[in-house]
Amino acid sequence: MAGPRQMAVTGSAWSAILLGLPAAAAGQLGIPFASGVDAAGFLRAGEGVVYSSSALERELTLERPLVEHDGPYVIVHVAESRVLLMDGREVTWSAPAGTGHGFQLEGQGRTWTFTTPVGMFHVLRKEKDPVWIAPEWYYIEQNLPVPPPSERARVPGTLGTSALFLGDGIAIHGTNNPQLLLEPDPDDRRVSHGCIRLTNEAARELYHRVEVGTPVLVY
Image 1 (cartoon, one colour):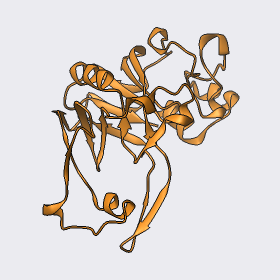
Image 2 (cartoon, rainbow, N blue to C red):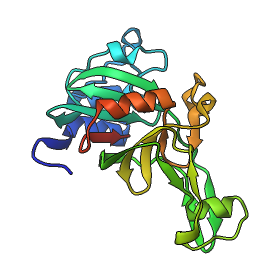
Image 3 (spheres, helix red, strand yellow):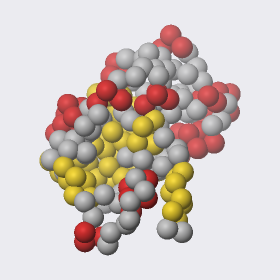
Protein backbone atom coordinates (compact mmCIF):
# COMPACT_ATOMS: atom_id res chain seq x y z
CA MET A 1 0.00 0.00 0.00
CA ALA A 2 1.02 3.63 -0.32
CA GLY A 3 3.64 4.90 2.10
CA PRO A 4 5.68 8.08 2.48
CA ARG A 5 7.71 7.24 -0.64
CA GLN A 6 4.64 6.36 -2.73
CA MET A 7 2.95 9.69 -3.15
CA ALA A 8 0.02 10.36 -5.47
CA VAL A 9 0.23 12.23 -8.76
CA THR A 10 2.00 15.58 -8.55
CA GLY A 11 -0.67 18.18 -7.87
CA SER A 12 -0.47 20.29 -11.02
CA ALA A 13 -0.37 17.32 -13.37
CA TRP A 14 -3.35 15.69 -11.64
CA SER A 15 -5.38 18.91 -11.94
CA ALA A 16 -4.80 19.15 -15.67
CA ILE A 17 -5.54 15.48 -16.24
CA LEU A 18 -8.88 15.59 -14.43
CA LEU A 19 -10.03 18.99 -15.61
CA GLY A 20 -8.86 18.79 -19.22
CA LEU A 21 -7.32 22.24 -18.97
CA PRO A 22 -6.42 24.09 -22.17
CA ALA A 23 -2.75 24.41 -23.01
CA ALA A 24 -2.45 27.99 -21.72
CA ALA A 25 -3.96 27.21 -18.33
CA ALA A 26 -1.92 24.05 -18.04
CA GLY A 27 1.21 26.05 -18.77
CA GLN A 28 0.42 28.41 -15.91
CA LEU A 29 0.29 25.39 -13.61
CA GLY A 30 3.56 24.03 -14.94
CA ILE A 31 2.01 20.95 -16.55
CA PRO A 32 4.70 18.94 -18.36
CA PHE A 33 2.37 18.28 -21.33
CA ALA A 34 1.34 21.86 -22.01
CA SER A 35 3.44 22.67 -25.06
CA GLY A 36 1.31 20.87 -27.68
CA VAL A 37 4.37 20.38 -29.89
CA ASP A 38 3.31 17.66 -32.31
CA ALA A 39 6.88 17.11 -33.52
CA ALA A 40 7.74 15.88 -30.03
CA GLY A 41 4.84 13.45 -30.01
CA PHE A 42 2.55 15.46 -27.74
CA LEU A 43 -1.02 16.62 -28.20
CA ARG A 44 -2.52 19.63 -26.45
CA ALA A 45 -3.74 19.00 -22.91
CA GLY A 46 -7.18 20.35 -23.78
CA GLU A 47 -7.72 17.42 -26.13
CA GLY A 48 -7.46 15.03 -23.21
CA VAL A 49 -4.57 13.10 -24.76
CA VAL A 50 -0.96 13.26 -23.67
CA TYR A 51 0.74 11.14 -26.31
CA SER A 52 -0.16 10.94 -29.97
CA SER A 53 -0.72 7.41 -31.20
CA SER A 54 2.30 7.67 -33.52
CA ALA A 55 4.74 8.67 -30.75
CA LEU A 56 7.56 6.34 -29.74
CA GLU A 57 6.73 6.57 -26.05
CA ARG A 58 9.76 4.70 -24.82
CA GLU A 59 11.98 7.41 -26.31
CA LEU A 60 10.18 10.31 -24.63
CA THR A 61 11.14 12.07 -21.42
CA LEU A 62 8.78 14.20 -19.31
CA GLU A 63 9.68 17.45 -17.61
CA ARG A 64 8.84 15.92 -14.22
CA PRO A 65 7.52 12.61 -12.88
CA LEU A 66 3.75 12.12 -12.87
CA VAL A 67 3.98 10.07 -9.68
CA GLU A 68 6.34 10.80 -6.81
CA HIS A 69 7.83 7.37 -6.23
CA ASP A 70 11.33 6.11 -5.64
CA GLY A 71 11.33 3.43 -8.33
CA PRO A 72 9.34 2.40 -11.41
CA TYR A 73 5.64 3.11 -11.67
CA VAL A 74 2.94 2.33 -14.21
CA ILE A 75 0.75 4.72 -16.19
CA VAL A 76 -2.43 3.51 -17.90
CA HIS A 77 -3.45 6.16 -20.41
CA VAL A 78 -7.12 5.39 -21.08
CA ALA A 79 -7.54 7.92 -23.90
CA GLU A 80 -4.69 6.30 -25.81
CA SER A 81 -5.43 2.74 -24.61
CA ARG A 82 -1.78 2.31 -23.70
CA VAL A 83 0.26 1.14 -20.72
CA LEU A 84 3.57 2.85 -19.95
CA LEU A 85 6.25 1.92 -17.47
CA MET A 86 7.96 4.98 -16.03
CA ASP A 87 11.19 5.56 -14.14
CA GLY A 88 10.94 9.08 -12.78
CA ARG A 89 10.24 11.19 -15.86
CA GLU A 90 11.48 8.65 -18.39
CA VAL A 91 9.28 6.19 -20.29
CA THR A 92 11.19 2.91 -20.21
CA TRP A 93 8.59 0.65 -21.84
CA SER A 94 5.10 0.86 -23.32
CA ALA A 95 2.53 -1.32 -25.05
CA PRO A 96 -0.93 -0.89 -26.61
CA ALA A 97 -3.72 -2.02 -24.31
CA GLY A 98 -7.40 -2.85 -24.31
CA THR A 99 -9.58 -0.73 -22.01
CA GLY A 100 -13.25 -0.59 -21.03
CA HIS A 101 -15.75 -0.26 -23.86
CA GLY A 102 -18.24 1.78 -21.82
CA PHE A 103 -21.34 -0.34 -22.46
CA GLN A 104 -24.03 -0.74 -19.83
CA LEU A 105 -25.78 -3.90 -18.70
CA GLU A 106 -28.84 -4.27 -16.50
CA GLY A 107 -30.16 -7.31 -14.72
CA GLN A 108 -30.99 -8.76 -11.32
CA GLY A 109 -31.84 -5.24 -10.16
CA ARG A 110 -28.32 -3.99 -10.91
CA THR A 111 -26.61 -1.86 -13.55
CA TRP A 112 -23.02 -2.32 -14.68
CA THR A 113 -21.07 0.26 -16.68
CA PHE A 114 -17.99 -1.31 -18.24
CA THR A 115 -15.45 1.50 -18.14
CA THR A 116 -11.88 1.42 -16.88
CA PRO A 117 -11.88 3.25 -13.51
CA VAL A 118 -9.42 6.12 -13.15
CA GLY A 119 -7.35 6.99 -10.11
CA MET A 120 -4.31 5.88 -8.18
CA PHE A 121 -3.91 2.15 -7.57
CA HIS A 122 -1.11 -0.17 -6.46
CA VAL A 123 -0.21 -3.68 -7.56
CA LEU A 124 -1.79 -5.74 -4.79
CA ARG A 125 -0.71 -9.14 -6.07
CA LYS A 126 0.78 -10.84 -9.12
CA GLU A 127 -0.30 -14.17 -10.60
CA LYS A 128 1.01 -16.43 -13.32
CA ASP A 129 -1.59 -18.38 -15.32
CA PRO A 130 -4.48 -16.69 -13.47
CA VAL A 131 -7.92 -18.30 -13.51
CA TRP A 132 -10.93 -16.06 -14.14
CA ILE A 133 -13.96 -16.68 -11.93
CA ALA A 134 -17.02 -15.63 -13.92
CA PRO A 135 -18.80 -12.73 -12.15
CA GLU A 136 -22.52 -12.17 -11.92
CA TRP A 137 -22.63 -9.90 -14.98
CA TYR A 138 -21.15 -12.65 -17.18
CA TYR A 139 -24.22 -14.85 -16.68
CA ILE A 140 -26.63 -11.97 -17.23
CA GLU A 141 -24.78 -10.98 -20.40
CA GLN A 142 -25.09 -14.58 -21.66
CA ASN A 143 -28.76 -14.82 -20.61
CA LEU A 144 -27.91 -17.63 -18.19
CA PRO A 145 -29.17 -18.20 -14.65
CA VAL A 146 -26.78 -16.77 -12.06
CA PRO A 147 -25.38 -19.50 -9.80
CA PRO A 148 -24.22 -18.84 -6.23
CA PRO A 149 -20.62 -17.60 -5.93
CA SER A 150 -19.27 -21.01 -4.91
CA GLU A 151 -20.60 -22.57 -8.14
CA ARG A 152 -19.51 -19.96 -10.68
CA ALA A 153 -17.32 -21.06 -13.56
CA ARG A 154 -13.55 -20.93 -13.25
CA VAL A 155 -12.19 -20.15 -16.71
CA PRO A 156 -8.45 -20.62 -17.42
CA GLY A 157 -6.85 -18.61 -20.24
CA THR A 158 -9.22 -15.64 -20.27
CA LEU A 159 -6.73 -13.51 -18.29
CA GLY A 160 -3.80 -14.73 -20.35
CA THR A 161 -0.55 -15.94 -18.80
CA SER A 162 0.09 -13.10 -16.30
CA ALA A 163 -1.93 -10.67 -14.22
CA LEU A 164 -1.30 -7.71 -11.92
CA PHE A 165 -4.32 -7.23 -9.65
CA LEU A 166 -5.17 -3.67 -8.61
CA GLY A 167 -8.27 -4.31 -6.49
CA ASP A 168 -11.99 -3.67 -7.06
CA GLY A 169 -12.05 -6.43 -9.67
CA ILE A 170 -9.56 -4.57 -11.90
CA ALA A 171 -6.33 -6.06 -13.23
CA ILE A 172 -3.72 -5.55 -15.91
CA HIS A 173 -3.60 -8.94 -17.59
CA GLY A 174 -2.96 -10.90 -20.74
CA THR A 175 -5.61 -12.13 -23.14
CA ASN A 176 -6.70 -15.04 -25.30
CA ASN A 177 -7.76 -12.56 -28.02
CA PRO A 178 -4.57 -10.61 -28.81
CA GLN A 179 -5.81 -9.56 -32.24
CA LEU A 180 -8.17 -7.07 -30.55
CA LEU A 181 -5.18 -5.15 -29.17
CA LEU A 182 -3.38 -4.65 -32.47
CA GLU A 183 -5.70 -2.01 -33.95
CA PRO A 184 -3.81 1.27 -34.50
CA ASP A 185 -6.79 3.42 -33.45
CA PRO A 186 -7.04 3.55 -29.62
CA ASP A 187 -10.84 3.70 -29.85
CA ASP A 188 -10.82 0.31 -31.57
CA ARG A 189 -8.98 -1.12 -28.56
CA ARG A 190 -11.84 -0.36 -26.14
CA VAL A 191 -12.78 -4.00 -25.83
CA SER A 192 -12.77 -4.93 -22.12
CA HIS A 193 -15.29 -4.90 -19.30
CA GLY A 194 -13.02 -2.53 -17.33
CA CYS A 195 -9.72 -4.36 -16.98
CA ILE A 196 -6.57 -3.36 -18.84
CA ARG A 197 -5.64 -6.03 -21.38
CA LEU A 198 -2.20 -6.60 -22.84
CA THR A 199 -0.91 -9.25 -25.20
CA ASN A 200 0.47 -12.20 -23.26
CA GLU A 201 4.01 -11.21 -24.26
CA ALA A 202 3.54 -7.64 -22.98
CA ALA A 203 1.80 -8.81 -19.81
CA ARG A 204 4.66 -11.18 -19.01
CA GLU A 205 7.24 -8.44 -19.54
CA LEU A 206 5.39 -6.01 -17.27
CA TYR A 207 4.92 -8.79 -14.70
CA HIS A 208 8.68 -9.23 -14.42
CA ARG A 209 9.43 -5.49 -14.43
CA VAL A 210 7.25 -4.45 -11.47
CA GLU A 211 6.81 -5.62 -7.88
CA VAL A 212 3.85 -5.83 -5.54
CA GLY A 213 3.23 -2.33 -4.21
CA THR A 214 4.17 -0.55 -7.45
CA PRO A 215 1.98 2.55 -7.99
CA VAL A 216 -0.36 2.44 -10.99
CA LEU A 217 -1.92 5.70 -12.18
CA VAL A 218 -4.96 5.18 -14.43
CA TYR A 219 -6.30 8.28 -16.17
